[in-house]
Image 1 (cartoon, helix red, strand yellow):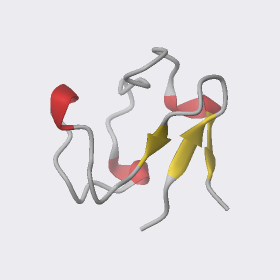
Image 2 (cartoon, helix red, strand yellow; image 1 turned 90 degrees about the horizontal axis):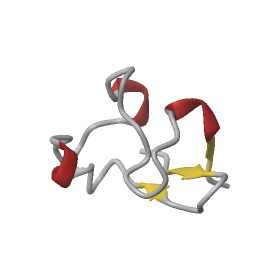
Image 3 (cartoon, rainbow, N blue to C red; image 1 turned 120 degrees about the horizontal axis):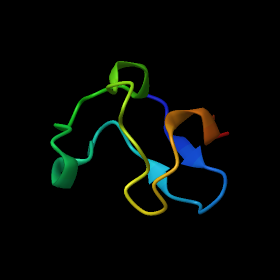
Length: 53
């Protein structure tokens, strides 16, 4: 699965890890994150994330 980077702060969403502190289990693809999920570091929404090269 592809990783995605929050452009403003550099946080990397790794689907293999998920975001367990915010109720997102490991194995959750970026595309499957809830629409109201935000970056756990800076609070920006999914629209500011870009696919990691």
